[in-house]
Image (cartoon, rainbow, N blue to C red; front, side, top):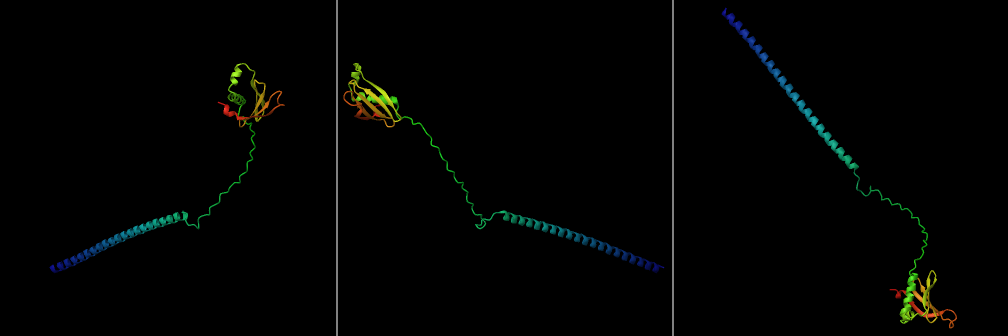
Length: 202
């Protein structure tokens, strides 16, 4: 009876151990499988990251390369072959302008009053006694008797009765004379007196 009990106990223990070993193997196998799956998943994630990084880096490098290529293409080359020839500046022909002559009335270089005063001063200077004779009441005078575009004529009537005509050039002030002595000369004759009226104007 005891023998049967021990045999039965042995068989049960064997079966129990066999079942435990099988469970342990299954658990170990499951753990190994799970670890393998985890390892495989991690590898895939790592590879995916690597590929993404490589793609990103490659894309960035390609974009940078394209940008450099576009910038280089946009920049004008400094080669003399590609430099466009300088265009000549078109010159507008000048139209000759015909200026109409302006007619100006010449302004006298010498006024009538200046001519009269200059001649009178000359007479006083050339004959120092003339003022005294004039103060004593002898008849004599100076008069503007002729005006043209180029000449003033100042007539001097001397106390002796002779006439001297001073012809004053308006532009230069030069003076020439003619004389007339009643009863002695036939009309006016050239005189010997010449001077410049500007020399007798103060």
